[in-house]
Image (tube, rainbow, N blue to C red; front, side, top):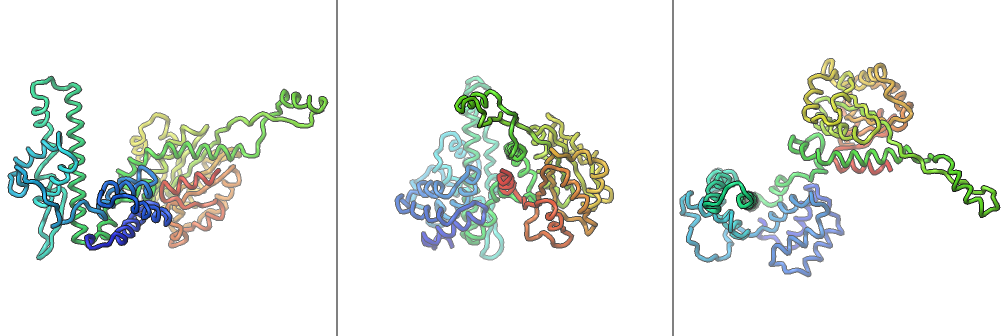
Length: 457
């Protein structure tokens, strides 16, 4: 049980839980955090949280997961060990729900964070417990929220606070923001106390593994949810800009601009008019052309969804982008991603109108052959070819000669594979065969995609 842990055990377990949740914490950072504990007041819980956050959290996106795990490993209270509190006019154990809702309405507008947390703990104790057999119990947030329904208190609070004042103005807007913020803090306090009670019953290590989803940049493309994809859209445009910049650098590398006659003649004055040193103008920035060949089969549907979002964003960065989707045949899908189009609508039209499926079984070889027959003109000496897929072709011929021909005509070619590297060449995967023709990179999440982009420089 967590209350029996020493501070060292708690520290080691907390750092290990952060790593398991996908937050990068090095050995040196763990030692820095331990040193920080020597110079703060350990009884001040928020100072402890701040010390750990300052030494272990690298990005704002990592903070929510960090806070969840901190509350599990360093809980504000433990069952049966609450400090004595002053007597209240309201007894949370005997008051009827109407009185509790009135009390919550007051806390949402004028209560402190500490009062809101204490009330949340009392409500979890009263409403959150569900029997689960002899000597066992479960804890739930939804039963607390159902009993109190804080989201339905807005009208009552507005009537009490605004009284006879005109509605719809700045005063109402301010009250609404304060109440909504209070509701969110109450929901978080309830969820935190529920997790704390489950950890006491089941073990903090067990609940820690399921309480935190990985940070957004660590979520596996093959396991993303619709909500994750909505959040990932914000990551797409910065990645597209960086990818375009890296590929443009590769195109410019080794090129020189035209002779700068004026600078060359000016420099020759130092050598009696003899142009010993020649100067050249900087090469003109060049936006390369890009061809994206994307596996859209069900086995990589989430990855395909993300890569199509990336393709959509890349159209704003490159002079010319052509996108092709395939399952067991191939079709150009560039027309669905015209600038300004709604991306969700474009995805829907693509699924209904694109000609990418004959029999429904992925066939890389046939798709490559059809691409070479129908769209050979898409690849040229200024083209970067980007292939996105898991290289699983249902034991069909891989058409390596066709791929080799396409790669030889392009300026650069890259293959991003969403499967873990240890799964390559298992089952129907021909990753190594394709990787011998096109450099293949493991790309399971945004962090790996970012690393791939950086390697292009």
